[in-house]
Image (cartoon, rainbow, N blue to C red):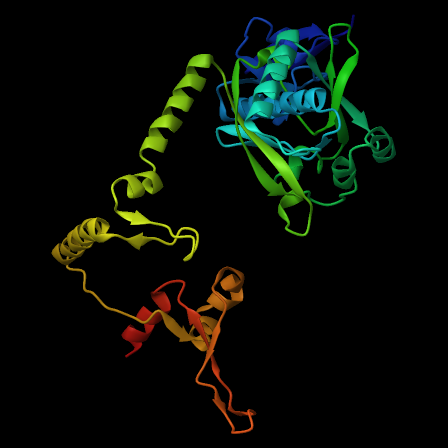
Length: 366
């Protein structure tokens, strides 16, 4: 067998040409992916003469992202095992976890998550290998003809967007097969990867909740069902994370506001818009007094400005040019009408202020 010369974690090595990173790092169970010439790759990646290989452990940011992405794949596989007619969306890793979007026949409920999680544990126990397979657009469209959302992604020629980039958008179009113990594919998904060597490298996970989500984030697209989950390098780390969430829930301001009769968020007003009750008013006043005193002690001076202004001020500041889509719509004021209803004097557009700086500039100007 011919040999090749490579560098592994800074050390020069000679090895047989058919050796893969999974063989090189066989004694380092914490290594789950690697970088080859700076690019994140599977441990089953073929190596060439002169390659520079760097190990990536499961507890590193890249290692955690791959762990969670692979767990999302296992969840999608489990969903289609339990609910065969479910169509797949996308399933990226996110901070502290992952999600996958589905188009199921029926809306998921908490009992469904229990069934899906049980199916996932069986897949993990089987130790199915993740195998990367390069394909063409025509082949992928034929193979995934039953997955309309995947076919839509295959047709994207430019950047796919942050979420969909885990599926498409690279130099090659690839599908990952999950291989059973006999080496044959038991499930496949459109994906760029990389992935863990096998499902047995998923130590600890939990499905958290479901939510509704528009396909690719647009309200013009179908509404899908999203399942959120989390995955960690050990059961202890998963338990610590779940405990942290439980403690955070105990301290959630919405819960405490109700329990302590401080404030509430009436539906009649709008999401996130609070009304302070008498007890909450006392707490808020104390906080405002403390803030004011501390500013005065540091020789800050107080000025005040209105909450509305004519559009021209925000045109000058550039806010309308850059942030109009995120600002409240304008109000038309000062309009004068003739007796017959025609406009005698056009009104002015007034905007709610997004920040104080333009007003403060006028104070300096005066």
